[in-house]
Image (tube, rainbow, N blue to C red; front, side, top):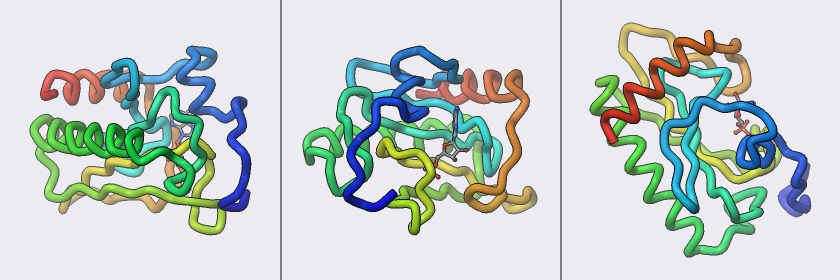
Length: 144
Ligand code: AMP
């Protein structure tokens, strides 16, 4: 998938937005959806996406829409910090397969880092227990 790839409505996050497949939601409004990464690199790894902007990456999203996403990223990072009290927070965003992108709907990762817990590498995590994801989403939601 090059940086010039056209947006595909069949991508997995488009399916999540439409409700065609389930997700563990933390926050949602008319523009933004924040949900748990199903293959978390650490406890509390979550994703923030725009619901209507059909952008594959940071190059092809309208700036106003990007601003809504980044505002939500800050809001979620603050909630993750308050709820889970990590030692650090990594915010990551990948553009194009050579850069590590695997889902071609623009998204930001919020990855809490804990000094005494391992953090997996991007693309190398196992699926999480759905009950653990739900419980963590509720903790973050409460802190919004
Ligand atoms: P990227 O590699 O930056 O495109 O990130 C895509 C992310 O989506 C990865 O961290 C995956 O673990 C995550 N992911 C893939 N499928 C799902 C899904 N069905 N629900 C939640 N997260 C997913």
